[in-house]
Image (cartoon, rainbow, N blue to C red; front, top):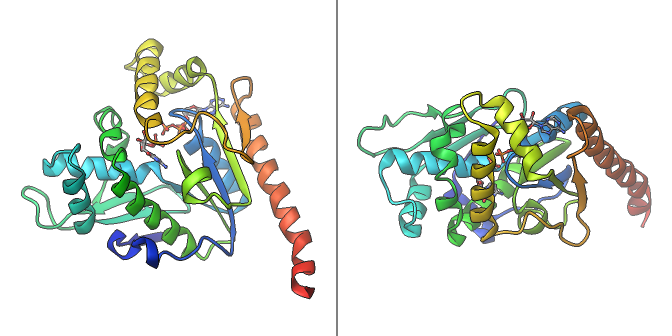
Length: 260
Ligand SMILES: Nc1ncnc2c1ncn2[C@@H]1O[C@H](COP(=O)(O)OP(=O)(O)OP(=O)(O)O)[C@@H](O)[C@H]1O
Ligand SMILES: Nc1ccn([C@@H]2O[C@H](COP(=O)(O)O)[C@@H](O)[C@H]2O)c(=O)n1
């Protein structure tokens, strides 16, 4: 399912509450398995998955392509006024942006699914995610996407989902692993880079991102899932078990609510 969202419509006062379907919020540092583990868990549960980092990456990609200064909050906000952003919540992930009226860019939608994972974007994305006003706009967009998804459940993953975007979600997980373990796993999918280089990059990005939000320590009520000693399947099972537990709890609480 593809959602087209205009962030300009997502001003804080216009944002629908994140209610209805079961929402599972997952945060974690770079390379902790948010995309892969959370996505597999969501698929097994029949839920949608909203990868919020993809929006920051797409915004950084668009800023780089249009030549604006990523450190200039007003310029990045102006870009948010002009772009359209699409992301799939189910099936193979597809991320697309349309940025009209910029030199050298076609006004039609561009599929950026692969390009936003490039090292050149990963290395610059923290420059757009550091702006509080940009975060507010994107957070409003995320809440709108979830509220309008019509899905029985959505897993939403990022850095500040358990604390800022959906602090009332019935499931809130901080997914983590030791930096060396994360670097080893990430290096296995990036043959050109050594684990040492990947570790340096991960640590540098986490340090920049941690200046803005805390995704290294679980907030009160957030369940810590450390996968350092777990394989992929065990990690997925840990996450799905927590979500299934919340589903069962919600189902058992519902008849009481209805008769109250
Ligand atoms: N428990 C695990 N055991 C083995 N490999 C794992 C485990 N968890 C994640 N991985 C692998 O680690 C790599 C990084 O995971 P992933 O891309 O999902 O992290 P991420 O948190 O989304 O990273 P980023 O924030 O940089 O986008 C992937 O290759 C994934 O398959
Ligand atoms: N909720 C979020 C999600 C992401 N970011 C920023 O985006 C970058 C890319 O995120 P990935 O999950 O794809 O690694 C990340 O480094 C942050 O700068 C964010 O700020 N908040």
